Length: 292
Image (tube, rainbow, N blue to C red; front, side):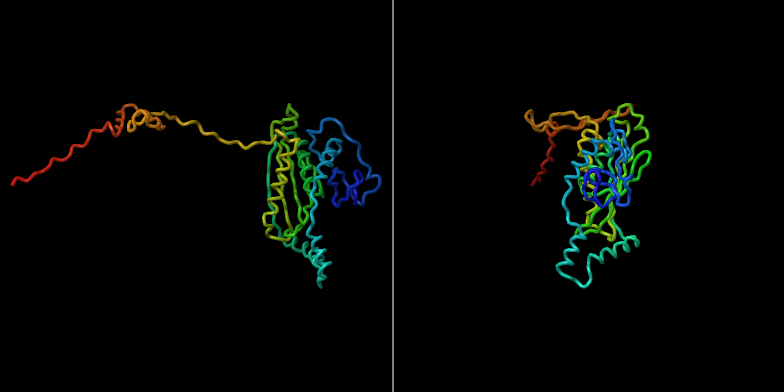
């Protein structure tokens, strides 16, 4: 299938280049694109409405041009069948066995989460550009009142089967009432999950995919300055008092010794410990002489 808007080939319900809904079973009336929207798109959390802004579509087209050229696992199996000509086609065997393994619950995956102090429209655009730039075609979009769930196709590789990337973008209920449209009071949460079917171990593939996706979302230019940095607790300064040691004279190095705390009321003050030179020399024991 080809996108009726930009002409790019795709197999999902939405075009990876511009985000337009594509389907081979729709009629001509349904293929007509809705009218473009103008105005402020930064507060838009609806996927269907966000992609109707010309600026958003231009950003998705630019991000789609950066998608890598990968060779899927199905293409590798097809090439092996062509060269080796085995008795049983590995490509057809993989197509037949993968649904059975999915029904048996054999799968692997990982999850990642990040919060952004930005308007929901900016975060959603960064997520769409991250999926388009990674080459993950959007298969389905579920809309909610305070967010949306995007399901993208995860192609197979030499060591992993195909799967899905599910990204949930949720805004806080108070964000719509924020006075500043660019910096809402509460953050927008992005939760991403990668699921690979038909295998128990993916050798860290899902974690690497999510790490690259979250990093790409955070580095998007629309989120510059809006990423929520982790809070680091800085300990209070210690109460130190530099003194000069008595053992080395005036040229001795200074040593920071913590200041002693005052004694409780009614208790005698502790006596200071004298230095090596302040201590009295020990009196040698008397020499005992035997008288002949």
